[in-house]
Structures are given as structure tokens and as C-alpha cells.
Image 1 (cartoon, rainbow, N blue to C red):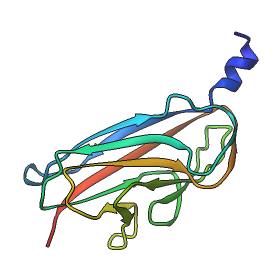
Image 2 (cartoon, rainbow, N blue to C red; image 1 turned 90 degrees about the vertical axis):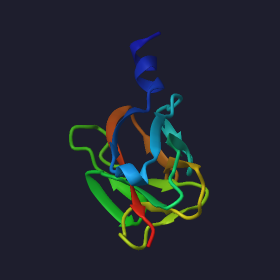
Image 3 (tube, helix red, strand yellow; image 1 turned 30 degrees about the vertical axis):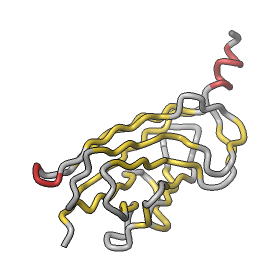
Image 4 (tube, rainbow, N blue to C red; image 1 turned 120 degrees about the vertical axis):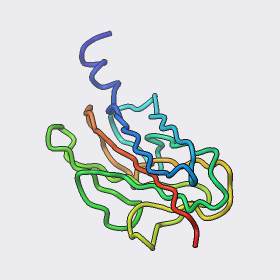
Length: 148
């Protein structure tokens, strides 16, 4: 494979750091899986960049998740990460999933609405974008707070 083709075949690598903040009484499990088929070029709105799986969610848990990005969060769950050391200066991403809503309590990230024992959240592109080959580090945090 030519060097040019190798460079153009990789959009960027998502390096996800997992940060769980549950107490023993409010436990859940979480796994982040970056998309494996990312390519440079034009990327459509709602393209999956990573999938975040949650399971064994406690019945009395108010589960919330958010991105810890260098950049801005113009609305809960919508991010414009900024990476100084990358050719990719910023991208627009969002957290989305069935029964996940913007977290209006903390005004950051998203919160799971409902009593599911498992749920899937996705990190998606927000709008049509053009990506060059880059590496972007993304950290997703989650917490399980007791419902009141």
C-alpha cells in the first residue's frame, strides 16, 4: 500500500479513557468501542465515531455521561473538541442514544431516562464535516447518582 493511500485511509484514531465514578451501591458497567472503519474525507452527519455500552445499571441509578474535551460544549451533549497537537483543529460531535436526553440538571453531557438494565450511547458527528488524517484523544466519563 502506498504511503499516500495509508495516510488517506485513516481518519483519526479515537483514544478513549474510561472514567467511572459509581459507588458500590450505585454500580454499572461500561465499555467504549471506537469505530474501526473511519476514513478521511467528507463525513456525513450522525456518523458513528464510537459506541459506549452500559450494562448492569442499578434500578435506583440516575446514569449520566459526558465528554471531557479540550474545547467547548455549546449545549449539553454537543461538543467542539479542540486538539492543539493535531492537524485537525476541531470537529463537532455529540452524544446520542435511545432514552438519553441532554442533562439539564448539570448542564453537561446526557442523562439516561428510564429504568433500563442496559443501554447504548453513541459518539456521533454533528453535521457534515471534512476530516483529515489526525489523532484525537477523547475521554468519556460516566456517573451513577442515586435517584431522589
